[in-house]
Length: 254
Image 1: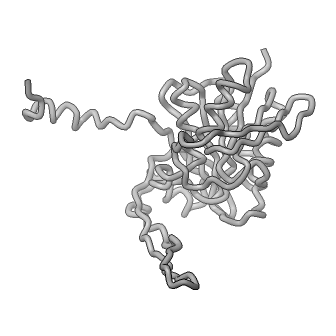
Image 2: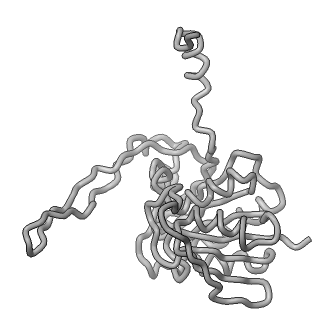
Image 3: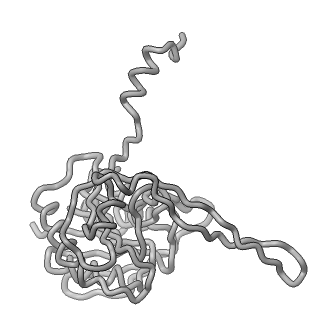
């Protein structure tokens, strides 16, 4: 049976990143794109619950259908699985994101929110990001590596509860590395401004600070050294070591 591949993103259905990802996947099976009708960065796993979601078909050709959705990236996956696709897809792909989703950025990422939704539905799911915010970024250096990862997962699906977060650095790429998620934090800065009526408002700015980029196991180290990072992510956030210690430390009461 022909493979069925669902593609989404958080930069919008018209972004160059999703077009590049569709081009990678189009010869690997039937491709259905269900993506936001505009940018939805930073949405994480958010879903739309307070107003209706609208969806329309934009394009169809031999083995590709493209839909736009007024919701979040997670909404796109949910809607595709429930109302658009005629069977469960073999693969959910999200991206190619314009900007890094490595380290703790994964927690904010709409790109990876869609990936986690696919993973929760027991579908092999991969998020792809390129560490450039340039809307016209040239993805060429990383495309062959990304396609190879897709092909591997189509042949050997990921185990349930595990998905992949793949990030490519700028510059010359030396290869790929399987990595641990790095630790880091955004140093939030708010640009304060005032409207003509004097009311204050704020734009979120700031920069990302890695806390362990010198650890050669991490994704941030990989990027600094010219490698694409592949991080296997869990949707089970339980710390089982602490789970056992808490049970032995009197936290349970009856």
